[in-house]
Figure 1: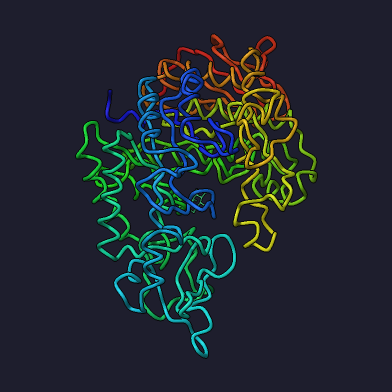
Figure 2 (figure 1 turned 135 degrees about the vertical axis):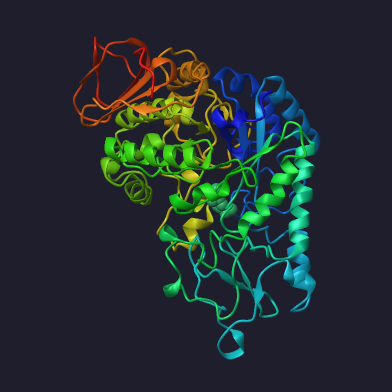
Length: 545
Ligand code: GLC
């Protein structure tokens, strides 16, 4: 086993509550994951990343953690966790768990203790408590807004305020407190000792804060996009001291454990999270935000390749995850060539009716985009259900929406539940084989066409494309990468080691293919013409310089 396995891994994200339910409560669980190891194995992935499975009231889909060193009883036990890890490891699949260090849940023992303790007590110092402003301190300490909308401060029963950059049920921790630091080291060792191979660090750019008075009003906060470390809340340089300490813990293990940062920072500062005295990788969300446009893809790929080369790191490619509208849907909306994220957000608000979604076009482009990212140097993070070509569920009834973003934004953002609907395993039966009970989010009827069972039997299905592409990709070694500059407008052509070429046609006309043996394509190819919205891999024999 090489210790830098992650550098070119295909990692599959499991959102445990929506993956597979071994019981009948409609909530996916760890035994469900274990039962699907053969499926994961047949996909050809190198690792899974599990979103939080810890005890939680689910105020934010499990990213509100009550206890970092246990399993939510509805999802199983620590024994189930161990069994799952053993089964995955036996199949050669590594395990990454999600660590949520920016905030606990409001049901965490520390927060209960803090509320019961007086102002200025050591228990309150583990969080960020402040007196309010105005008469009787009845107004929040600052006008900061939480990411989900509304004030970032909530009032404790005794009138003090606590900071929550996300939902009020997610109080921010005070990372200047040594007890907080020590406790997370215990948590890292707890899971590393149980055999996990790595950690995904939630909101990695948020932990350290400059909360010296007076607190900077929102209007005077620097823009994170051109940040230089001076923002009081995000991406502060001191955060790297924490990761240096964590790295020493990761390196205590053989093989060393790895970590990938969710760092929503200016691209120019992303590399700071990565290095021999930091974490191993940082997510790059550039393509996930890109329009369906060759130039835009190319510029974003260039930036990531250059950035990771100069940092001596490896690239990460992401098209979908549990926080964004699925890429098949983003690319099937009329705004895809312009501003897919905004168009998708508006589409969700219209209950998935406006603008009209072209499902076939979206899926065709999604397959092409996936093949493109699978050919790039570095690792790729896939999100459960994308291998089935699943679309976002756009018409979830608002009364069933769990995501705090919906209510806290006053209904102006519908939230992320549409990509978290339990995945279909069969085309019929209760909840399409997900559970014997009622799924925690309702599945639409069209899921029947996208089920694992339906696609398993179809050689042209998205699932089959992922399987074949992942199998081929595992043979592609080395980091070399170069653009082939005879690229036609609206087509991107790059060369990888051993003369492995990849061309994606983003345009609306077919593009003639250069000489070479076709290895694989995201859609059928007729003769030597690459159809629109298609990616092809072929062997040209050229080598990147
Ligand atoms: C990350 C997670 C997201 C969660 C937030 C707060 O961005 O990916 O799902 O809501 O952190 O923990």
